[in-house]
Image (cartoon, rainbow, N blue to C red; front, top):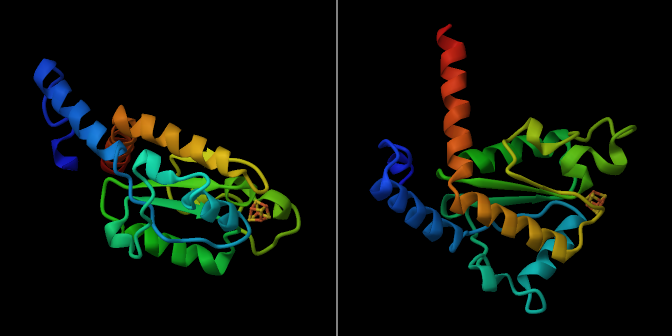
Length: 175
Ligand code: SF4
């Protein structure tokens, strides 16, 4: 489906197709079953009945990266874990989305000064679409992040940004 995006010049028909694809994607985001540290406890609450992520079509965490299009990174990523996070991301099919949950993955959090083994921001390993700050963020904050991601997916912003980044990288490589 990714090949269809922006494959034709903008006009009424292709714009409608883009919007329909975006609507379908944002209405059925499949997050990966994945958690690292304390923030993951709040993430689990979001999947449970009280907060009910099913309302937004994202309440079915998948057990494999190959069936997931969203990875929420909740917790402290250390140098050893960074390799695993990157590998999981690489195994997801495009289009794929990333939410950084918590101060640790947004920029190091409480470990920013003395955490010699902590990656100071997961965006140094994989591209992040939404940052949700907090230590830990409340479930409502994560839901807000998911709603903002849905808006971006609906507008096809995520794909456009990645496409532009790819084109810039190829132009820089050829230069
Ligand atoms: S941000 Fe706070 S709650 Fe979340 S993993 Fe780091 S230390 Fe734990």
